[in-house]
Amino acid sequence: MIPLLDLTRTDLRDLMQQWGEPTYRGNQIYDWLHKNLVTDPAQMTNLSKKLRARLAAETSVNPLELITQVDSEDRLTRKALFRLPDGATIEVVLMLYNYRRTVCISTQVGCGMGCPFCATGQGGLVRNLTAGEIIAQVHWFERWLREEDGRENSLKVERPSRLSNIVVMGMGEPLANYDALLQALRAIADPDTFSLSARAITVSTVGLIPMIDKLVEEKLPVRLAVSLHAATNRLRNRLVPINKRYPLEALMAACRRYQQKTNRRISFEYALMRGVNDAPQHAEQVADLLADLRCHVNLIPLNPTAGSRYQPSNEQTAQRFQEILQEAGITTTMRLRRGVEINAGCGQLRQASQQSDPK
Ligand code: SAH
Ligand code: SF4
Image (cartoon, rainbow, N blue to C red; front, side, top):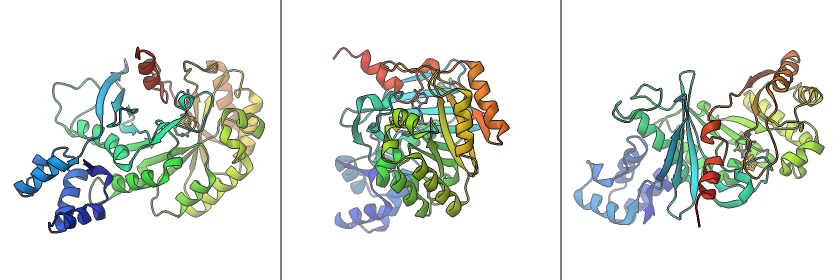
């Protein structure tokens, strides 16, 4: 079976040529897939019956099989767990917030970066997702939002509507799966098909410097978020082990290069961990480190995960941390602990489902 979402427009035109069809059929199929989001070749009504039958026999469209989905009590977050064709599982989250409809997507099964507080990191890297598997996550929730409001509408959202934002903050390190990520994001930002603005897409990275530099050169103005979590090498080596290869000074230099070239503000993610990185002195170190960047800091009280001893900061400590940054002129948001009760922390639903799996 040829996974159609893995093919670019050019690939699809080439495939049609191989099949002895006119190449514009490739464009038509591409539009059905990426504009109309159809998952069944039978719906591609401008193709011949014969071509539709061949597509049905030899290709596949949607690689995602829904295993389970959970809504938060406030009906603003939905988390879905999917099975991929090889049996691997991934998580995707839809978040409704301030008129935004944001989907948080995964780029790898597992992750090889080994951050000790992260559920995804605990099992290591299983494999990269393909471009089609990344695109399909976005299409899944977009399809649901586009549907007429009907029976199944347990979330607080008007339908039909569209996704407004994408954050690449699910399972995996996106810049460690660079080519598939870029192919997927180009398809999503393609003004002729899915047409979500690249500026509405945020890629979160642990700080793979060569890939940050590469991203700067792409004509794809996505936003960058860097997972900081500590402002000294000593502490960051522990919390984000890749820091040993790409230490803070070099990472900050890459962030400055990114900013000079793109003129875009950078976000930094900082998970507040009780007694580890949440003291006033840590906040001062962050303020110093970021002093010469135009940036925004997202503070996230840690989601505790099974198998890790790290705990969230208490509210007072977190607030004090935020005040210090704000007094230093750095804008911050305290990410609400939304979705905690549905295990919406990175990799957590999957972990829970595997733990309850008797095998
Ligand atoms: N691998 C990328 C993107 C996926 S993780 C990265 O690390 O940036 C998305 C964000 O969730 C990162 O900032 C990550 O550090 C954070 N995160 C992971 N586990 C978490 C947890 N248990 N609680 C809070 N934030 C967590
Ligand atoms: Fe990987 Fe990001 Fe988790 Fe670190 S925090 S292990 S980079 S997914």
